[in-house]
Image (cartoon, rainbow, N blue to C red):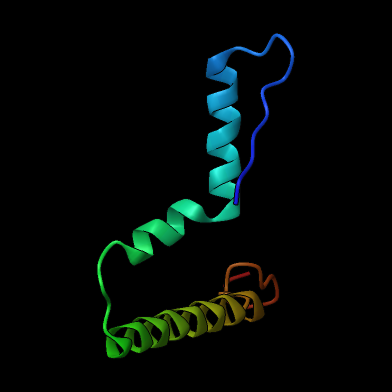
Length: 80
């Protein structure tokens, strides 16, 4: 639960801005969006599986990209 107390001489706009930051930091907006509609357990597991596959693919691509020289930085190759 998010609690906010007005500070002395604090403008309402500043308090609302602080409240929005607190709500977002606490994850309440994300939770509300997630609970807005019912999601079947199979859909949840499918979404989680796809997210894991995407993470694995991105980490695999970044690992391959950092290990290979790409032929650009090799100064001893042909043509030099």
